[in-house]
Image 1 (tube, rainbow, N blue to C red):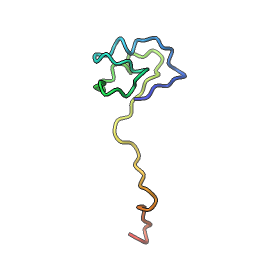
Image 2 (image 1 turned 90 degrees about the horizontal axis):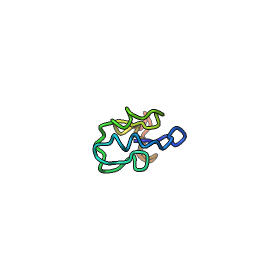
Image 3 (image 1 turned 135 degrees about the vertical axis):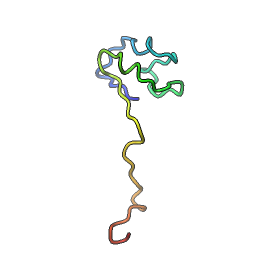
Amino acid sequence: MRVDKEKCVDCGICAKTCKMNVDPHKTPNSNECIRCRECIHVCPMHALSMNIGPGPVQLPEQEVKTAEEA
């Protein structure tokens, strides 16, 4: 979960909506969060977002092989 600090106006709507009593703008990656995304849907400023999945994976340089080496 990500919080855009420039958009967040600290209104507390996300925290009031959370079924797990997490305050997403203070602890966006709390272990208590069940990733229901309700806080994202209710944020009037669109300050919350979430990426699903691991994102881009980059190997360390010593493990990267060129096409000629493969």
